[in-house]
Length: 90
Image (tube, rainbow, N blue to C red; front, side):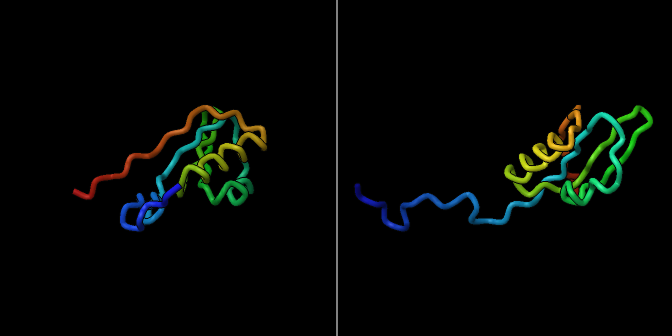
């Protein structure tokens, strides 16, 4: 097997900084504030309909999957996951 010269190798997708994306996770029930630190400092908002929204930046797919696993681990029923659109500065 021959290796490609350095200039011909594809660059790693991690070779540039990727900004975190803000996500909203909506779950059934009211979560207590102490879960915020365990869930990566997400902001918890409790709603009158008996649900909670957790909002915060997610750096990459690995962190997203980790947060989903943690929500599963605490027995939270996930209702929705949404990436929050970036507001245009124009």
